[in-house]
Structures are given as structure tokens and as C-alpha cells.
Image (cartoon, rainbow, N blue to C red; front, side, top):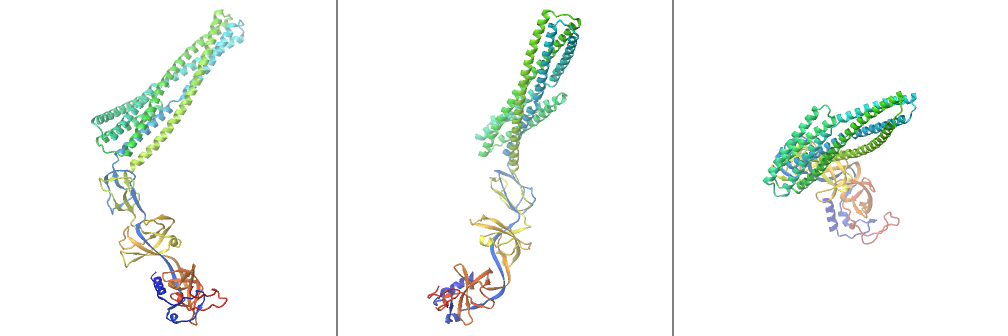
Length: 627
């Protein structure tokens, strides 16, 4: 750059008359005083100079994603940490309460799902189908009985039919008794009501806790009555837990309790335990009240709404349990009637058999009785078919309920994972192993999302972080050599290599778009520090034994390069040349000159004297005046 300034100075102070730039000029006094150089072969190295900053690599800033007061600092600047080590802890009282609420909501949703699954509508459908078949069989027998009573022919066929009726009636009675016994043994409706009732109580308590928490956040602070209410909520939660454990013990001691109900009761105990934790956390929060943020109030409002939804589901479950109990009682009553009917049908079949054996004709009263039995059997069949239809509809409704409960459980699990991650964010840990280069907060400080807590870097590996414009970036290659120097170490240089060149631009601190270049530093005894300023001379090309001239000897015109050649006769010629790579001092000449040619060191055209160019000159005709 200094040499080009010198060339410009020479140009300003030269006062000779200019001539055309495309011809030859005779020797004059100014030319005699001009300095010339010889075209020679040299080794040329093209270098890009970048300034940058020393950084550790890898190097990561630890940024907080939450707000709150720093309650504990675990490290100091300059200390070495491992990935996952604690850096600091932020007050997580609210986050823990939010997590417990999310856990409670998940356990509640899981319990709702288990309760929905525990109701097996296929049993009711199977029983209804069996009742239809029994009613159909009873109708067949009643019609045969009527037929036997109406006929006076006591043939062997009639007797055989009567015997078959007796066998069928005995089978129907056996099936009816088995069905009744099965219904009585599988009757867990009372237990399901207790389960649903306790769940309802838990959800009522959860809503009350959430509402009390929201009230204390929105108001200036909790009152003595609020704290007393929170203490009662803790006692109620503990009582619910005791009841849940007792229900589980009784169910486990009963060999007839289905495994599904045991699982439901276990989940209910877990839910009650979660409610106790929430009640205690809420009480602790009220006693240690602090000014809430808008985010905390919004979260509390969401928890109240979630508790309302959970309570509504619990109420629906409780009502369903009551309905299931009524439906079960009706099924048992119907099964008892089926047994009585089967006994009557068996007696009737045996009576018909006696009539057939004795070849006795039925009286008119007997025939009327048989007709009435046929009507009753038809009515029983109609009722059984209606019950079957209702059972099938109930099965479809329950399947939809199970599906909805499963969706709610999955959503609650997603919310739980989010709450868990948020809670984890209150304990800030090292993302990488390295040295703590910077530590911002102290214990007691308030921090907010986006604040840099610390910077951690690997001091075993330093790089120069620099930026190059598009002209230089396209010439810098990975693994290119670089000579690195520092202002703080004026007589020291290091040999580094280019680690990477970005493929896209980045906005620099100066507000310009540039390509990031990372240059590795070798291990050294120099006391290298993160943040030092540095310079890097990056080799972009090396040419061996090529024609070259001083860089200031080449000028441009309309985008073309030229030099002023000194001819053997002392005259001058402006000659266009093709250039290659350049170093700080020399430029490669690809074509237009040969070794040994002499040129002006400073290509000043106005050292010429006006002459005319011969016709056919490759540079065109000369004009008077300078060009």
C-alpha cells in the first residue's frame, strides 16, 4: 500500500506532457531520470491478512431460560468443570409446584384411563346374548308344550319330543344358575364406586389447592385464613392417602378382586401421595410468599383450569360407577328371574312328559295355561333382545370413553415432560467440559431468560475467530498455512492452519455480512488468553519460478493491466499484460513480457512525448495530448 501511495505522489509531481497510451515515444530528459526494473523469475506467495480474536474451541455460553433468584453458586472463574457439573441453582419453588401439579394431572389422567378400561362391557354383552338364547329356547319349549297339550295323539314321537324338552329345560336351568353365579362373583361395582368417590375427593382437593394458590398470587399476599386453609388441605390430603391405602389393602386381601382393580387402586394411592406433596408445597409457598411474575400467575390460572377439567372427569367417573352398580343389580335380578323361569320350564317339560307317557289328554285349563306361557316366553324374548341392544350400545360408548381417556393421558404426559424440563432448567449445568472463562451472577442475584450465566471453553485448543469479505473468502481454503501475530507479543509469531471457512455469511459486530474463518493455534508457551486480538497472514497461493514485476509497476485501464516497457533504443511502449497471483511486493506476469525486459518502476504515461504510431500497430493509433 505504501508503494502505491509513492507511485501516486510521483504521478502528481511529474509535469511532463502526456501522449497516447498505445504507442511508442522517443527518449527525453524525463525518461532519462526515470527508474527502471528488470522482469525476473521469482517465487510468489499470495497472502490474505485478517484480524480476529482468540477463542477457545469448543466454547459455549451458558444462557438461562428461566427467571428467579440465584440461591447457590458451585464454581469459580478459572475452575475446570466436566460436562453436566452444576454451575448454579435458581430458586425453583414455583417450578417444583408446577411439576407436581403436572405429575398430579398425569396420574389423574392415567387413573381415569385405568378406570375406563376396568369396566369390561363385553361381559354384559355376553350375558345379554346368553339371555337371548335362553329366552329363545324357552319360547320353543313353550310352543312345544302348547302343541302337546292340544294334540290327543300320544305317539312315540310325541313322547320323544317331550323327553328332549326335559333335557333342554335342564340345560337351560344349569346355564341360568351359572350365569347368576358368575354375575355375583364378578360384581365389583361397590368397589368401583369407592374408587371413583375417593378420586372425586382427590380432584376436589386439587382444585381447592390450585384456587387458593391463584388467589394468593393475584392478591398482595396470603392471609392468615389462607394459611390455615392450606394447613387443612394438607390434613385432608393425608387423610385421602390413608383411605386409598386402606382400600388397596382390603382389595388385595380379597381373592375375588380383579387384577385390573388392584392396579387402579395402586394408581390411586400414587395420586393421593402426589396430592399430599402439592398441598405441602403450596403451604410452604404461602408461608414464604414472594412477588409473583405474570408468567407464574398465567401458569397458576392454567392449573386451575386443568384441575376443573380433572374434577369434571372424576364426577363423570363417579356417576358412571353409580350407573354401573344399578345396571349390575338389574342384571343380577334378571339372572335370578331367568333361574326361576328355567325351573318353571323344567317342571312344565316334566309334566308334559308324564302326559305323553300316560297318553292322557290335556284339559282345557291346561291348554290355556300353555298359551299364556307362550305369551310370557315371547315377551321375555323381546325383553332379552332389547337388553342385548342396550348392552351393545353401552359397549360402544365405553370404547369411545376409553379412547378419550387415552388421549387425555397422552396429553398430560406431554405436559409432564415439559414441566420436568422446566424444573431441570432451574439447575444450570455445564454443557461441555472445560474451563469457566466467565461467571456472571453471584448468590442472591436475580436473573432473567436470555441472560448469560457463564462461558465455558476448552483451553487446550485455541483458535483465531476472524471474518473475511467475499473477495478474500473465495481464495481461503481449509488447511491453508497461516502466520499468526499478536499485539501483546510483538516479537512472536505462531504457525497455524485454517480449520474452516463458512459457507454462508454472518453478521459481524461491525454490522456487515462476512464469512467466518477459524484458524487453529498450535500449542505454545505463550500465555494465550481467550479474547486476545490477533492477526493472521493466510497463504492462499504459491507460484514457483514465475515471471514477475513489482506490484507498483502495473497499472490498469478499463479493467486491463499494463506496464511501460523501456525499449532497447531508449524509447517507451505502453504494453497490456495478463497478470496472475500477487504478493505484497510482486505480481505474476502470465503473458505480455519476457524475462529480461525492462519496465518503468512507476508506469507514468505523461513522461512521453507526442509521436505518431505506425499504421498497423496492435494498440491502435496515437492521439495528441495524452490519453
